Image (cartoon, rainbow, N blue to C red; front, side, top):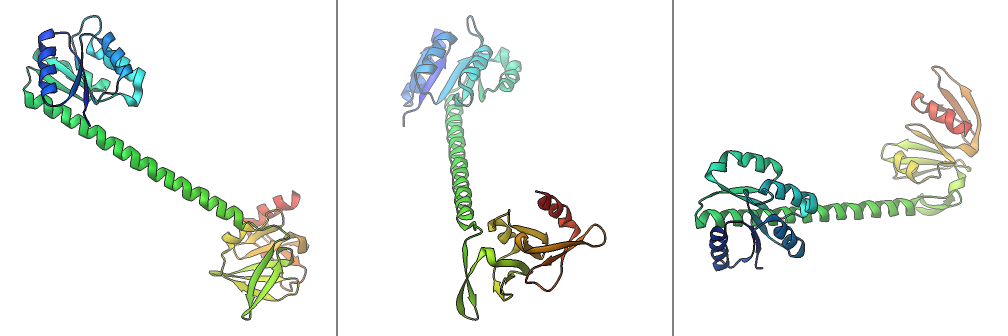
Length: 268
């Protein structure tokens, strides 16, 4: 790829010398003697680097840099100031405005080429990093969407059917028949209307992500109940409750953590 350089320099001798030097090195160079012409060129072509004198007629290099940044934002190519020795003390101001480098006149061929090469490589690296970041973001977005689709596909309706392995035999139960789910570490025990316990490898959090929320209520870190089978709720101590469920002999204690949620959902 042949790199194109925008050269903004009002001194015709300096401008011609830089033009000849860079074209001999294989660069395409668009020379300009003032900022207005330089802006027109920048709008019409794609440049790898901008070389700009600070002391220009009508507008300074500082003015141009601010104008270019307002116009092109992050799309602005690397901007390198060309400055006389007398202006060296003011180069920091240019760097604070967003210049990428500065070269002090008179400069050698190697100094100029090194600065341009450094800026081209740096911009290439930044573009590669940006591309990698975008690809990672896209990959992460794809994974999130896939997970959302998977979660949606796993969601169970109240009339859905669940296939289980019971005593090494396939068993089919309806979600509406589930009365209680108990936590058994990495497993869970399902109690249905026939009062037969079924064990499945699924966490309580996983259950809460797929069960219809208008029907099932988590009342303890170890219990999820089907609200349709609640016979009554008894007050216990410390603002907690006991739940009596149809088809289940034991009382289900609501922990304080879930008591507020219980009251809210029962009101709703």
